[in-house]
Image (cartoon, rainbow, N blue to C red; front, side, top):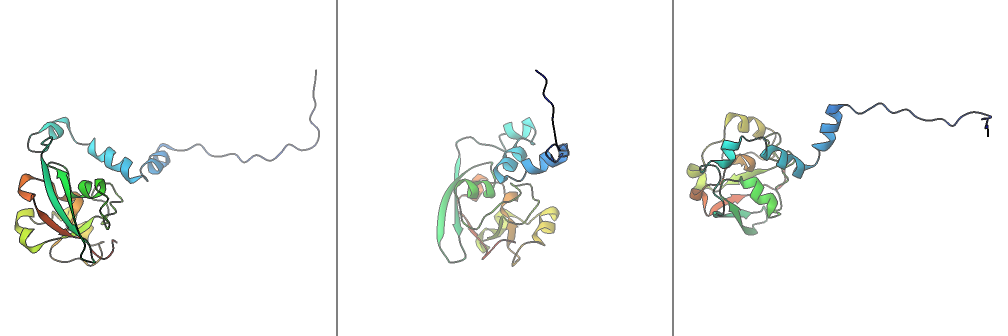
Length: 163
């Protein structure tokens, strides 16, 4: 049976094929995916190092929000303060870049008593802090603070808003 088409064919929009970079860009828009991707960029020796990761060791952190409400969370030694905040749904920590030090949405203030133990920010972190809201001398990006046993009881204050 032979069929013939009469009239005009319906208009079809032809889409350009997606490029690799556009697919990766769409993929990286999800913060949790970015955090997992960043975690696996570390070398095996970094993940397996006893200095980097102590399985089962927990450290207590206290987050105080802008209104003065304190929340105590437990964090695994070897992870970052940002990972602990996201895992425990701490308000005020957005972490849009997933911990890659590419934004300033995990900005925190280190309590004065803890500044010497936590240490100063790196130059890359200082560059990113330029984009943060209400930067102070005790400002840090929580994604750049590795949790160690010495930080047990660390007190962090979150700003009124993130950049």
